[in-house]
Length: 109
Length: 113
Image (cartoon, rainbow over all chains, first blue to last red; front, side, top):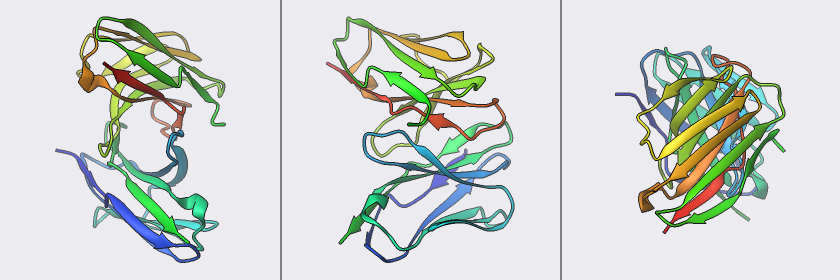
């Protein structure tokens, strides 16, 4: 079966750095997405990786290793507004998105 | 504002009621999706429409009935629901079915009593 694993919940301190991991086992691979979802709001697109390596976008970076079936989202200089759920999703060989259950990130002052 | 609007935001219904969820996108996209989001579970894809044609129905019970009158509008008709259908129902759109940066609405929080 297809599976996406990510931690259920993480806690970090304002101003610090946090890394949210995602491992996947899917039928084929056509890219990996990260979405952010604040409570009661729509998930919003953060990043897309299809090649190995690190993609940096401001305070957020996303890393992919296809050989290891592994990705992480790195958030730097954490702000209180970064408290949200972070969803990992993989596009499989049928171009269907397989979703993880999300990681709830709690930022403390 | 994501360009995808869902109404209503909240809905409480009894098991014998009939109601409809509405989704509208202002992005000029050709693919639209219905998802079910339950607490601590992955998003469950329910239906996909591409150029107004339904391309996927992921074994969804017949008490959920989708309708896509045009590329900008998507409905989910509900009838004879069960309490376990209580969840957040999300609509999303993307430019094409294979171009999968999806843009989501804020969802309808459904409670079935």
